[in-house]
Each structure stands twice: as C-alpha cells, then as structure tokens.
Length: 352
Image (cartoon, rainbow, N blue to C red; front, side, top):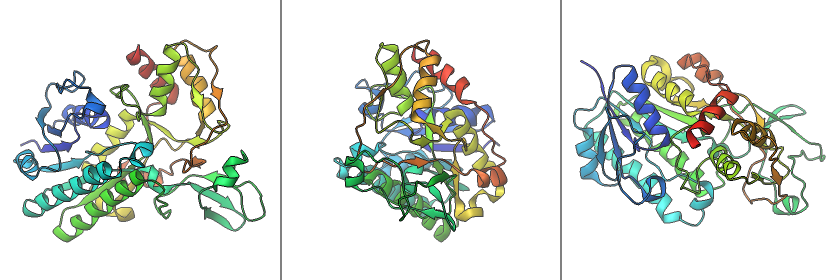
C-alpha cells in the first residue's frame, strides 16, 4: 500500500514542486494550505500549477481541527507552512511569530497524539547569518557588519587587522546568528520539530534551504526570490537593482533539486540521525549577485540591460553565504542536477 504524505503549505512554491516529485515516485499526496492572498492572490482558488492528483485541503496550520483532519490516514508529514520574507518579518512580528512558531506548535501537539513515520521540516539558510570565512588559524564565524562600516560603503567582511576575509562553504555545524524575526522563527521551527521528534519517537529531519528559484513563484508577492524579481524587471525593460556593490555571494538552487532532496530525506534511513537531523540543501556553488543579474538578462533575451548598482544597503544583510552540501551528498545521495543557466532559461520561459 502506498504511503500517504501531508505537506503543510503544499500549494506554495516549494510545496507544489515537492507534491509533484512525490506523486511521480508513487506516493499519495495531500496539501494543507491557507491559500494566503499575498502568495496566491485574492481569488482563494486552487493554483493552476498544483498537480491535479494532489488532494488540497484549505485550512490554517494554526487551526487544530484543520490539522487533525489533514493528518487522517497520513504516514509522513512535510512541514512547509510558513510566512516567508526577512524584511517583512521585521515589521510584521506578530504575524510571523504566529504562523511560523504557533503553527508549528499546533502541528506538533497534534502529532504527539498521532505520531507519523517521519517529519521533515523546511528550514532556511537565513539562520546562519554570515557564512563561514577563512581565518589565519582556520575557519571562523564573524559578526554582522556594523552600521558605520555600511555607511562608509566598506562592504567586505574583515578580520581584526582589517584584512578582507574570504568566504568558505558553510556547514551545518556553524553556530546560527539570528538577525531577523524570520530567521529566528525558522530556527524555532526546526528546533521545535527536532525536540518533539526526539521526545515522541518521530524521526525528524530539518532541511536548510539556500536561495531557491524556479517556476510557480508568486510574482505578486514582493518577498519572492531575487531571481524572479530580476526577471520580472528585465521583461518589463528595466534594469535589475542591486544593493551594495553586487559582489556579495549567494548559493542559488533549483526548486527541482530541492524537491528531490526532500524526497530523499524521506527515503534515506540515516537522514534523521546524521548531523543532528539537520541538512543543508543548496547547489554548493557561490555566485555574485552581478553574475546572477547578467545571466538572468541573457536568459530572458535582454543581454544589453545591465544591472543598476545602487550602492544602497540594508541593515542585517549578509555579505557572503553558500552551502557546504557534503552531508546531503553522504546521507541522502543528493547531487544538484539543474545547472544554473538551464534553470534560468526554464524560469524565463515560464515567466513569459
């Protein structure tokens, strides 16, 4: 008999791709989603991109009765329901804390009474703050850059002698630096799930996603990913706007690779044990934001529109962070398959 999977937030960007991936591999899929207007628009209708074989239950993860109904007959839970966006979280503190923290608590209290075979929770690279850097005596974690440094347009991370530090791949062992309400709430989500999983015998995995891009992203949402924002501007004949000097580095990973990694986290027996049950999912490759803007322009057929380097900054923004995916390779057998240029072309075609 095939396993039944519940994905909270399953009608969203990543959840919809995961649903499709699981169906392809013979699982039954149910989604619990509140169809938030910020993500899905005001209609409240089932998204057209959601696989027709996904059973959609409209409801809020903070509603215990809705969660009980959604869990009936379910063997495995993917907890992806969350309010997303670093900037917005800093002025909608109650909303983010309610959806992300309280929603997770309601789900876990329900799972206490009806445990499942595995719980997989979506976490975020935002919890790391700055990535890991190469110091004189080995890898070092660094504090966030101060406001005076940013005002002086001195963008790089430096050591005590003022030397520029070079970024390293960031492993799961790096101590979190929580510089936004969103990051704090994602860390709470993963810790609550891992804690309750241990207490109630539910094997649990927290997947720390890096910068995810791909089809099904909500362009009406101002807090969607930077790639979709760049693409939307380019398609309208406008230059992508870049903060600082554009040489900050990030790890961009296709949503298809994310979905596959999440399926592997269900199927790999050791996933809930190794590394404390926490696994990075990224491409393992750093790209500067300038590179990303240029490649996006080529993908949408607007190679002559160069990025606009604003020199502006946002307090709390990090300089560099990209994933060490050694654990995902070793434990899940995960290897990124979607090359950046191929993924950008697919995103561009979908946007057009």
